[in-house]
Image 1 (spheres, rainbow, N blue to C red):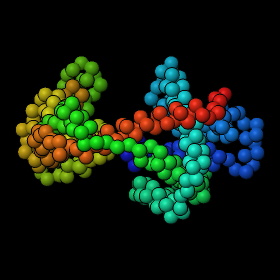
Image 2: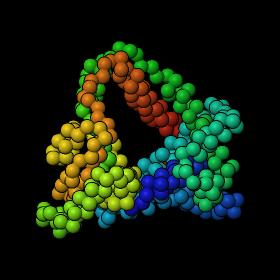
Image 3: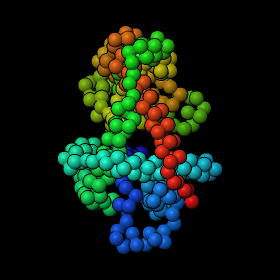
Image 4: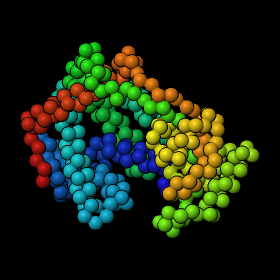
Length: 332
């Protein structure tokens, strides 16, 4: 299992790679070699080469290869390939348009953006070292963040700056979607799971060894053992790395026997050993929240933001379609 720390690091590296301008992956020598590199797309007077595409596609390929096999693998790879190439084309078009409009970005803006990005790296990770290992320089990073900020300013000017959500629109949405503003009763929980062996799962029978281990852990908890520590050391589910933290679950989310127990326990309580078809579980309830329905005043900002994002997205699609019609785009 990949740890959350490694998953976060991988995501940030892939995210940063996906932000990089297409010409950053070539040294001066390689840029000469690009003269014979296969061109996969032409966007006005600029090109996207196969090697540029491959650098961005590779991380997706490695992840998809682990999740799919056979015909499904090829179909998913082709879907991602088309989406990625389209994104690269759109990025070029938007940045070209930002340059035409004379949009500029100050050095301090770039520095602030990079500083904020560094804060997203896991504790103990060295930003500069990770970039160096990825073959990137700080100048590479600054150039791309400058481009991204230019694109962001264009979006603000051309797209978001022209979208307005009126109070009547928000109120109408509230009336038409009441289910979105009603929250069921919910509890915040931690969980320790000891899985049954495969034969017991397959036959739907008990697993005495797994049950005894769970009962032993419950005794430790009753004697004052730290729940999160025991979960990290013993639990056999996807929440183990987070100390057993599951988060909030709503009434009806869990199987009935667990659901009934969780919503009957007061905050701070630990359940008895509970059995499901996959294993044995011990839960700790941290917090309980009653069911409630938001008023329009409580939901107004949330609705306005949602409608704003939807309208801005639609406006961007229309703007991009128009930009594509006015541009020369050739996919090879």
